[in-house]
Length: 70
Image (tube, rainbow, N blue to C red; front, side, top):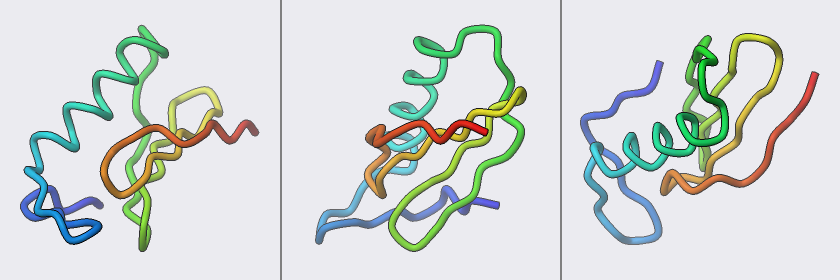
């Protein structure tokens, strides 16, 4: 599970709210009505699995990178 309390990247300190906001905004805009199945924090990215098969990959700053399809 992702620890949203502290996020740093590229030498910048980021608010956990900023990261969540950018990810949630993307999901709401591009995947309306879909549910997030789980969130995985990797070394330099986030993987958000959407119920139904798509995995959304975001960089460490919460910016969208790509969609991995099952």
